[in-house]
Length: 231
Length: 224
Image (cartoon, rainbow over all chains, first blue to last red):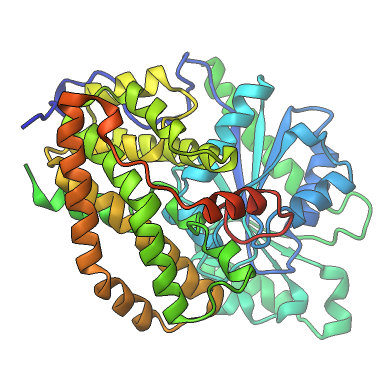
C-alpha cells in the first residue's frame, strides 16, 4: 500500500499561524473581533478602519450569519475600498468558522494578502455569537471580544472563554449606561476579576475618536509585529 | 493501512470547510422541494445516486492512482454548472490544506503545485485517502457518505428538524451508500486500465440549475 513518509517532508504543511510568508517576509497581523450580536463589532471595525487606514494597509474579512450584511455596511460606509473587504459564509454556525474549521477564513485572508500586498493588518470580524466564541490561534494573532453595557452589566461577571481569555475586552456603548442602569464600575471590577492583567477598554463610538484607545492598542501590536519582522 | 484514518476523513468535523456548504439543500428548501424528513431523505438518496456516484468515482480513482490532473479535467466535464465547479475547487483547496497537514504526501504536494487555485474536492480527498494508506473503496465511501451527510446536517439547521431523525435517515441510506461506493470503486478499477471515461458521469440537472441560482442569492446561510 502506498504510504509516503511524513518525516522526510522538508516543509511544514500549514502556514496558517506562521508569522512568515512562504517567501520569508512577514505576513500581515491578524486581529479577530468576536462577541454577541449587536454589541458593536461592525461599528468598531468601521471606526478602526477610519482611524488606522491612513497609516497602515488594512483589509477586513466579515463572517456574517446572513452573508454580506456586515460587509455591505462597511462598503456603504466606505471605510475601505471594496476590494479590501471579503465576506465568508459560515453555514449558520459562526463559531465553527473562526474556531473549529477555519479554512474558509484562512483562504479569505490569504487571498487578500496575495492581491493587496503589502498588507499590514487584517481585521477578521466574527458573526454575532455567544460568550464562548473564541478565535483559533491558527487564524488570528490577537483577539478582541466586544460586549456592550446595554446587554446587561452582569456579562463580565458571567465570564466565558470570550470574556476571560480574549487579548482585549472591549466594553462598548458606555454612553448608554445611564439610560439602561448599567454600573460601569461593577463591570470594570468584574472584568478585572475574570481577566487578571489582560486589558479592558470602555468605548463609546458615538463620541469623536471614541475608538482611539483600541486603535492605539492595535497600533502597539502592529509596531511590535514589524519590529519582529525587522529583527 | 489504518482504518482509523477513514473515520478521520469521513468525520464531519474534519476541518476542510464542508460545514459552510449545504450540498444544494438550502436552495431545495427555498423551493419547498424539501420540507420534512421524508422529502430530505428523497433528496439525499437522489443526490447520492447521481452526483454522489460521480464524486465517489473520482475519489476512488484518485485513491487508485489514476493521474489526478486527468481526473480534474474529468471532474470539470462532469460538473456543467460554473458555480458548482468553483465550489468544488474551493472545497478542494480547503481539503488540500487539511490533507497536507494530516496525511502529507508527494502526490498531494504535486497536485497542490499544479492546481494552486484548487483541484476538485473528491480528487484531493482520494489522494488524501491514498496517502493514509486507504483503499479506493474507502475513498469512495468517504465521498459518498459526505455527499449524503452534508445536506442532512444542513437541513437540521435550516428546517429545525430533529437531529435524531436526520441520523436515522442516514442509517436508512446505508444500503444505498454501500451500492454507490462499491460501484464507484469498481469503475475506478476499470479507469486504471481504460482511462477516465470509465468513471461514472451521473448528474442531477436540477441541482446544477438551483446551484447556479443559489450562488447569486444576496442573502444565504450556506456558501452552496
